[in-house]
Length: 269
Ligand code: FE
Ligand code: FE
Image 1: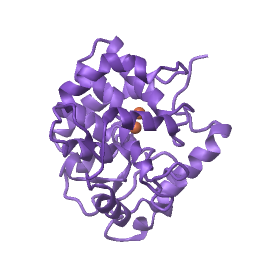
Image 2: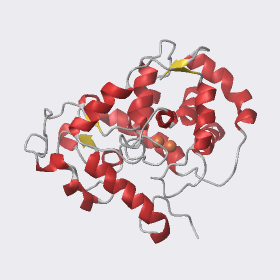
Image 3: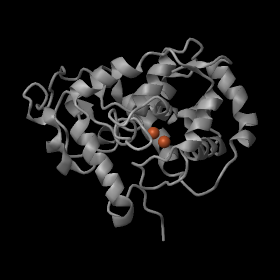
Image 4: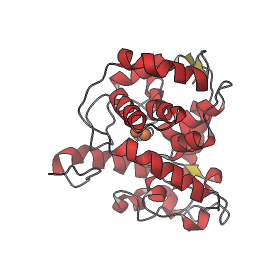
C-alpha cells in the first residue's frame, strides 16, 4: 500500500498530535508571539552548526505523525534526497539545516511551549497571528479556542494588516522556522540565497502553501515564494523513511558546503 503522509486521522498517533495542536491554537496569540520574539531573538549564544545538529539527536518532533526518529535523521534524509536529485549545493544545505531552529528546546521552557515535553511554541504548522484563523488550519475546530478570535482587533480577515502587504510583513505563530530564519539573517557570514531563506522561513506555513488561505494578504512577490516552498516541500515531506544515517559519515560531504554558505565560525543563537 502506498504510504499516506500527514494523515491526521490515525487514532494511535493522533491523540498526542491533536493535543499538541489544541494547545498551539489556544496559546499562540499575537501577544505571546511578540513576547517570544523579545525573549528568543537575542543572538547571544554561540554554537557550532554541527553541535546544533548533534543536539537534534535528542529531539523527536511530537507534531509529526510520520516520523518517530530523532529530528537530525529527518534533516539528513531531506538533504540526501535533494542531493540525489542533483539540486544546487545551497539547497542541499537548506535541507540539512531547515529544522535546526528546534535547538531552542535547549534553552526553552514548558511554559513557553519550547521544551522537549511541551513543543507547541516550537513545531507544527504555523498560521498568521493578528488576523482571523482560516478553516484550512489542521484541526480547524480548535480555532475558536484562540483568545484573539474573540478580540475585534485580531479576528477580521485582515486584522492588523494592510491588504496585500505581503508575507514578509506578517507575523506568524512562533516556532523553529522563524527562529532559524532570524538567526541566519543575523549571522554575518550567511550567503544562503533568498530562495533558501524563504524555504527556511515558511516551510511550516501549511495554511498558505498548501491550504491556499490568506490571499488578501499576499503580494505579487509571494507567488515566487510559493514556487520555492512547493519545490522544497516535497523533500521535507516525502523523504521520511526509517533509514538511519550517521551524522559523522555525511559530514565529510556537507562540511565544505556549510563552510561556503555559513563560514567556519559559530552561529549565534
Ligand atoms: Fe520544519
Ligand atoms: Fe522538516
